[in-house]
Image 1 (cartoon, rainbow, N blue to C red):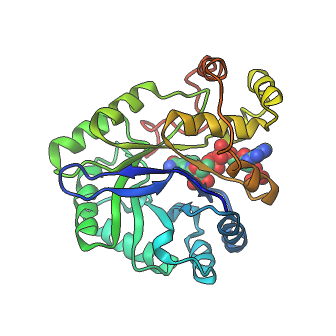
Image 2 (cartoon, rainbow, N blue to C red):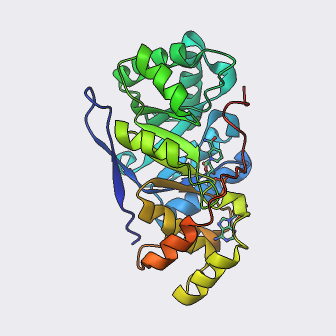
Length: 279
Ligand SMILES: NC(=O)c1ccc[n+]([C@@H]2O[C@H](COP(=O)([O-])OP(=O)(O)OC[C@H]3O[C@@H](n4cnc5c(N)ncnc54)[C@H](OP(=O)(O)O)[C@@H]3O)[C@@H](O)[C@H]2O)c1
């Protein structure tokens, strides 16, 4: 049976620590009609951490896969996210109810503000609603996604609960040093989205060389690099062989030279939107 290491989340002074499987299965861009099958496959392989979002339109599919599985709810870690259009206090509370209903769950393990959407100017007010959701027990942890340090600073000035997580684009070409150092200094867990750069890094010759020497695939080398960086990583594939490959990364280690070579690939290049520009 696959054994995935766990990281620990905290809500600083107010919450009790919560563990999170370090490798999660993401369902971005998976049609709802396919989501039940691929999520069920992921659970069969041994993934226990599922990452969805209201905007993905597939919370129902995730919910159907969970309902069809015999895995006890407490062994799963389920994340969903509030979409930008629903930012604001009352709208966030209503959107959370809708997400829980689609998932068919009594609680989620983690609820995230998907983007800061800075032009809206609503994420502080939204966070107040998130604090109420946390207090109600219907989310075990609350956090943010795509927040820059300036957004986290503003939140800290106007709230008492530090986000447990900041889920950001992170891969060998986007090392995110500033956001990672900021998060580390405040006890915020970093989750890496698009860990393979949405597949664009898979033809990198430096990583291909490491993969050949290690007898592993390029995707396995990149995902192993994430694991060794210590953050949580969200991997997505709808292809069962790749889903298995991506989870089979816990029986080898990169050499110091491998890690240094991968660190040298950073070009601060995004595959997704700039958080300052998506509103
Ligand atoms: N918070 C946010 O704003 C945000 C944004 C984006 C993503 N996310 C989260 O992060 C998760 C992962 O990100 P992502 O889906 O954008 O990108 P990704 O995981 O970096 O890349 C996914 C792509 O790589 C391919 N792939 C996966 N494993 C492979 C392998 N072993 N060999 C070859 N190709 C492989 C997949 O193809 P197939 O599926 O066709 O196999 C898919 O095209 C998402 O599902 C979502 O949960 C969050």
